[in-house]
Length: 214
Image (cartoon, rainbow, N blue to C red; front, side, top):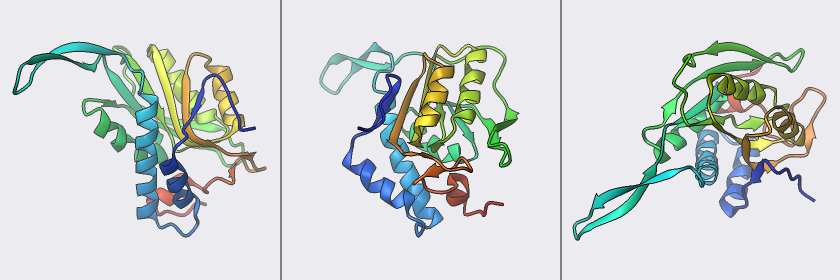
């Protein structure tokens, strides 16, 4: 049986399966890798934002006036640098007036713990919805740190979008933040002794930006 959790939504879509194959392959070049990330992030964003609040608005068509709907309140996307940057543009396409706030986190390769090095979140005026994006939810440490930063900011509704996740990362994140929602394309079987996802796709940041890990 696949991994399940009440805070988790796993996408079930033929296009997800297709693009995950390209994302995983070691032979996929960086440009194609970024395109796979973009498509998968678009599918994730469409699903995760399905129930955002809307409000009625009067619209005049070429024929008559009618009632339509628009998103209510402010929505912000918070990419975890650097790999999360590849998931921002799809959200901007879907929500053109979305706010973008950055959090810089990296994993200490010795301890596998997240290190917080950059934060430009303001002290007040939080958005109504915060969407944390990172291609991989491995140990859950970085995502949990990002969610904590948004909670301290006062964001009332928080969503986490990850293309590939692990049971360990989901449980870590959910245990620390029982009110959030997590949306992912697939839950892989787990982590190796270096805390990398198996079967995974390697280092998403290195593959996205054509750089070599240490």
